[in-house]
Length: 156
Image 1: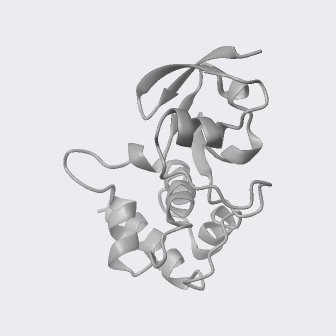
Image 2: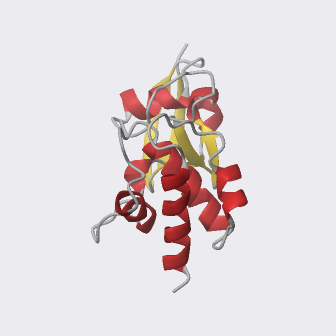
């Protein structure tokens, strides 16, 4: 039996009827049409489905949609503004940290959560923050450099 839930996604409110076993990933992608949240392993290992839920990065494939009822969620689509890309997104492009792009939304949201809580992380803190996000293209160094660059720019 479907349940009605209320979600606040990227500062926009949604009321959705969902089956109790639906994941937050599926609701975000298929009900709300926000396909920047990727489906990868669906068991919480790859991080491609990372969103920010109430200020914390989470694997949305491990969160039932009903658990997010009444909560604030940020997806990759919520970072861009009328002024353009978020500074972290700019840094990923500038540093070549975006290659195939599949992991990028999750990586960027994990980085945003880190920088929101720690505007000047060291390399170890950056690597720890993105540890739940797998990337097969970049070897992580360019991603770390992008997060460092975004951190440096936010401090100017």
